[in-house]
Amino acid sequence: MKALKEKDVWDVLHRGSSARMATHSTAKFVPGSRVRAKSMNHSGHIRLPEFVQGREGVVASDQGAFIFPDEHARGSKRSERLYSVRFEGDELWGNESSQSPTAVFVDLFESYLETA
Image 1 (spheres, rainbow, N blue to C red):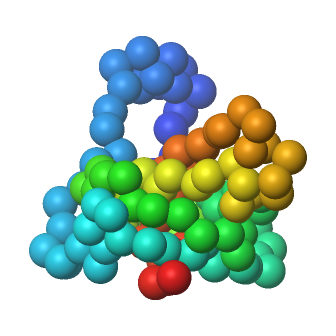
Image 2: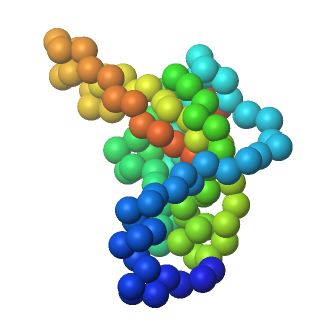
């Protein structure tokens, strides 16, 4: 991975770019699929929030494939499918959220998910 020179950082940030990548893989999940976020003991970079680990949700949408940041942080650039997953407040915080129904949408990479 090529390091940026200090003088080039602002130009790159200002110009911006997408982390979207092409993929030839078939989506493992479709909108409406019941999924569970894996429980992971992971040292290092990870984009799986602890508060959803082990919890069940429903895939709301398939966002396409993006650079998988866990490996990109170690210098490897590969794509992985990203899903928007809806978690109900009761699932995350118990019945205390039922008087004011709440849902949280979390974008999660495919390797963080399993079929519920």
